[in-house]
Length: 285
Image (cartoon, rainbow, N blue to C red; front, side, top):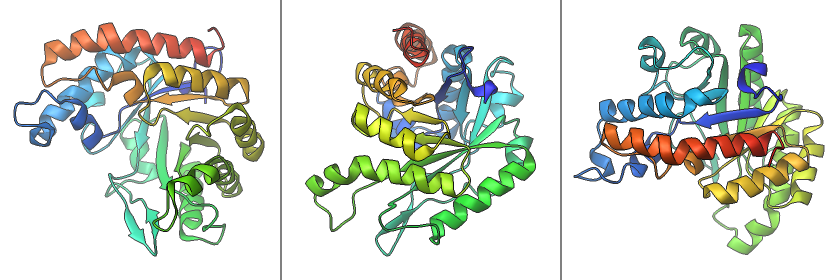
């Protein structure tokens, strides 16, 4: 935990494991984001580490594009810890429920081989439809055990979502409870650290903290703008959250196909946001 936390003991991780989402942010590609090659995306991720994440306690990266090059090339500095994302892009749907997949070949041992200080795995979850006997709970429990045996801290990321037969209004009403109940289920499966959606209010955050039962949870940015995320983090921290994991709220307008522009944007736009987020996480705002 200390490896992914501020000196004040609060989690602060820059999330940069996105693949298609990061391409979409590079909207100045002459032939559109879809034309961006793996090599070009890897270079953008390296710059994101170089000019932004090296100023944070930790960076979350993927093993498909960013790793192992960012480590092997010496881009990641010693003072910034590495969290290795284990989930593949997208999901499969079975009986109306979403299931994420592992990046091929990813195991707790592989996280160590890549130089990871911690791992992260994403599961889509509907705790009103999935309990401790479900496929997702079995997967979660098994990976938590494997990571524990390997001495790897696993961050369990949960995303709730609207079902096909559910209206927007029904889902919005259920959302805070789904986040809290998801945290409760993950803790029952043995989770040691959680990465969760903002449940919508101070009351929702307090409910999540109660459901987590002492397990620290970080709020994720979910693509909201930076100022909105600062308010969410401040509210979450005041109601028991243990930190924040921020991706697009930091860098979504700071990427480009041009190295020079990336350097300028990341340094002048994204980095000040990171410092402001650190203040919010540590209660200094």
